[in-house]
Image 1: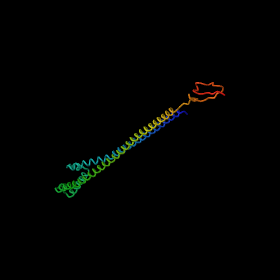
Image 2: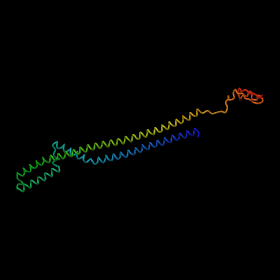
Image 3: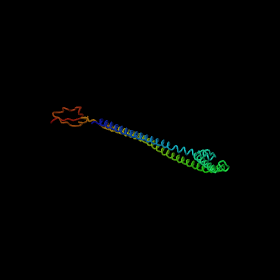
Image 4: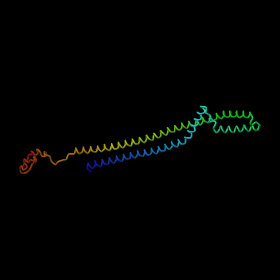
Length: 241
């Protein structure tokens, strides 16, 4: 096999290997990118589901906080319209009326005083219960908000990690492809250099040079038949005896 043929084969093999390695690196980066996209979809789906699940608790906590702010500003309408207070008030008044009717004093002044005392005591008792209920609901909303914030941060960190992994994979893939092709080009340059060196050092051999027979004495028979022959330069010829 000639040197040129060997160099060509080596060059083709170098380029082919580089192409295969480059494609493999690109495929690996693409696969990692696809996996990252799938992971991000899962993360976002989980985040959306969590937000959907926790929204009612957050809303309840916000409503409770609004009720507490109203009580602090002197607005008791929320308390007076609350189902617990209305039910207790209704049941208590009915009990007071029945008791007074049984005694024959349903419309007496004493019954009216009893109703007023009952109402004040009920309001005091139920207001504390109502306020505690609002506090509990507000704390539930606060805990939900903290949990939502922590879950959101965790989700954001996960998505950030996935995006960074995708970016790193693409960067590594590009770097690997660059290194592969750079190595291939260096290999081809080396082959070209070796071939050039061999060509420059190659010297074709000739059968004779102008001085091969210079200053030699050639013994020939029968005289000086080749004397002064220009092909033999300054050679001296001797004949026979």
